[in-house]
Image 1 (cartoon, rainbow, N blue to C red):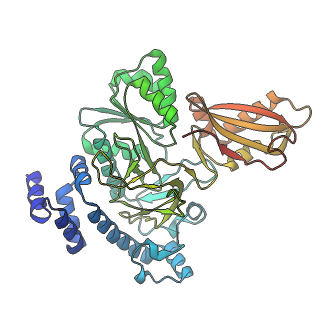
Image 2: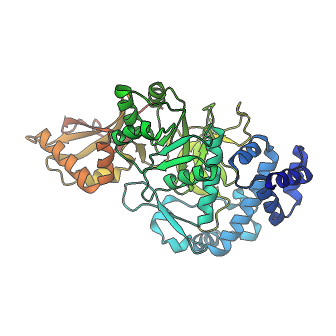
Image 3: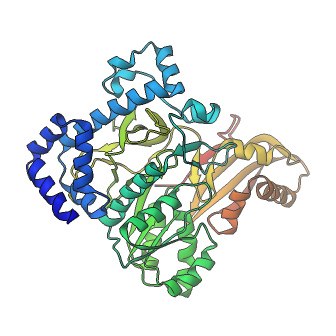
Length: 465
């Protein structure tokens, strides 16, 4: 009955006409439009996918423009942080029509880290999640239950677009602590009626022993964790798998090819963050960029270069508990304007080219120079000139310490001290090492050689993407 009502409403108010859909966005009051959208799309992943395949670009732009004005005005009234930024910049909220009217007003990671949550909260929260960064205090983002459910609804559509159906069995091996992704994936599967085990981040060998037992045929996990699981499967045999979804850190083409060869299944990459509420975008089977959830996010590229690459900036359009207005993500990407062969009209961004800060995302986690300053500062026999490099050997991330030794210092003693400090001061980083998500390496140099007279960059990423 409900399906029939949806079809009648859809035909009566929107029909098959793109101009009619645009007129609908322009003329129907927002509360009524929301009711119609809920009736037409509902909580159905297939319906949302069909909508995403056919919705015209002018309709999306109109929706985004109106949604931006709604959330901006809401936050300008209720969020201490944004109200203060607007006063300091001399901006009248009533005159703001779009992000271009805000000039240099942004929200940054430093703002989230340095200010109390009350500066960002607009109403009483019901849940909180943390980033996985290991450089001191994590960033915390607050949500309502409804907002988490909405994030799961859109992730469910992305899963459906990539072939996940009722009858499949999903195992999600994202960290299930304060990280949001595991929860959103589990709820997405629940909405779709798909079997799902959200098991945290177990040792790869422990999950491998259960793949056949529970007949999992869709695996969702971190790229480097997937490499460790695939090494076991390569030696002991791969179980039948139809799809692998990877997100959480950057995946090189070498890693992706290896995992696909082992399992004989496509690897699809997702992109998101805790601040985004989980997924912000996901590849389709074309694997030519991330299709962005434009119903929930308005994206900008700040300070683009000649090729269009710049820092990604996002505004959360649908959240009201802790809306983020023009949040600088620090990831470098660009828009892909050509239509995707898959037919989905949602805009794409390219795979992430790098970071605007010094953070490196790899198998150990989100690495910052400050981590290694804390690891190395009390290790005896080292000069103050050091460098840590993330490089790739075959299918493995290598975290290489390049250290200058004082005369008479024992390299094995330094290695032991560094390993001990990582284990005691950053247990999550050490756990990922034990899981086989990266390897440690050491290169010792005579004093004065590192950087050839200039102070070396503390943390470098030498992998090829």
